[in-house]
Image 1 (spheres, rainbow, N blue to C red):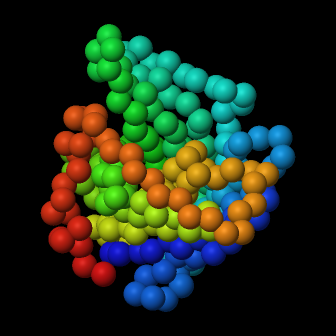
Image 2 (image 1 turned 90 degrees about the horizontal axis):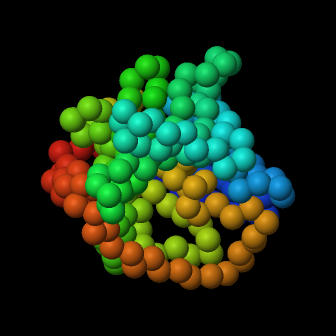
Length: 215
């Protein structure tokens, strides 16, 4: 399944997106921030279902898990429909050695753990791989060029469930990296040229994965 997430507006403390499949709108997203925080609430309608994501960490909360040699931070709760909580997503910092760390994202959804490994390729943009254990189930592509602070994501997923998880990951990374409450841009152009050098992240990227995905 191939989806497109297109940001259609950005106000001072809010943003809106639409989600398309085969050029038809299958979902919408509302992001609502506030003046006192960099965090935001996210409301997603997708495939006739509704999901909510909300920050639950408190001020600069970081959790250490020594047995996994990781720290987690910026946790968001995921709620589906009227259920209290169906999952969570957060950033992970994993200590590889005394001087080396790897940063990625982890999601636990209905008791299953998924990982998003971000990789940047300069002018080619971002190509972020989603795994369930050792199996790749999705990829999120993001162009390096952004006009008028409107961000777009291309999702490639093995099935509809994986596509939904990719949407949740995409919106979480938007909040963490690009959403700036209190700023309103009417006309701008930005080109992101960063290149990932971390070997662990680059090894997760499979350039042939998107060729296996049907619309």
